[in-house]
Length: 479
Image 1: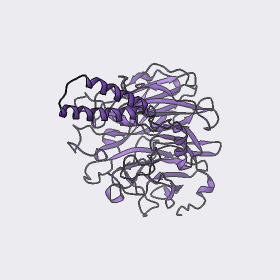
Image 2: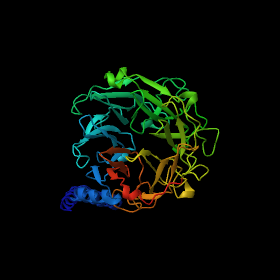
Image 3: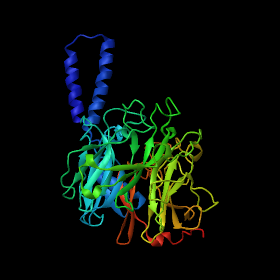
Image 4: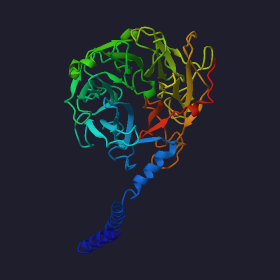
């Protein structure tokens, strides 16, 4: 306030030497008053000194067992205020490693970059995140990068592959980009120069070939039966090729699920020489009927597990209000027509908005699926078909070899909730975009018999939560 008072006095002394009308004096007085108020606001610290303490307290709301990253501030313009797509993986030295997409919350993904961290004590402590690719700050003109996913060769080379913008946009800026990759041969200390990885031209892409495809690999790739890496990805249909035109809400944008296989990782090639083979691609891509226009498709964010008989079982998010599934009997070369995921054959479907619904293998041979147990949209209390994403539910899955649907599930059990409390500690209604939410851009680890879900809380805090056998005791799967 002292600085404001001094500024105010200086201005008053200055205007005394100038002849002004009473109306001019009144106008100057109003301007000076606001200037004084603004000066007072600037001189007052924007955030309390104990902000980091407050952030740590808020991060404990979901009762995590591990904390990987907690920002120092909930200022939307703070570097690192937005964190998602949190993929934790086994490092070649026995450590835990992680890669994720980070941004400024206020920039809404338009400043995405990729960061890396490492833990040498089973996830208890993590190194400060290291920038790999993308802009350093909001003023940096480097093209954005995000949705990175890791692969580790047998010799220990760590590949990170990601979506890199070239400055042209389809439906959504941070989905639109080429594929690019880097690698490290020294456990993440140093990284190679980025190299482009060619992607084939698809019927779902820009017919003129000018705008890059819109795609995201959501989960970490898995080893296939031939020794390569296999993963599914979301592929949004370019505006020119889409059935729905004009301004539409993003959960309505048409999309399909496709798959890619990296076959020569263990030969340690340069990223540009990675051999990528596509399946379930183009005309054979997985499609799910659009909620309003069933001749169109919305299928995204595939999550894949391997069954005891080596079949691949894939679940995906849709805008139908349900999770859908498909399976492959030939290690991902061909896929069955998707259908709604049921708790058991002829049972009820698992409800879900356009929100991530990952399925992971547990150490004991069973499975866990995470979802929101609502159909999404206004009838469920959401702003659009993509929410509510709160609270989060879990169902236990068990293999049923002779069933039509080879995995059956227990009834849902609430796993965690933010109760609408935002990262600033303020509770808000679900329809408020600053309320707490649990968008599961997550990953999973099975180490030494310990199963851990690694997840972003409100796309801010990066945390881990154990899935203990005691917790699953009361979850009964139909037989």
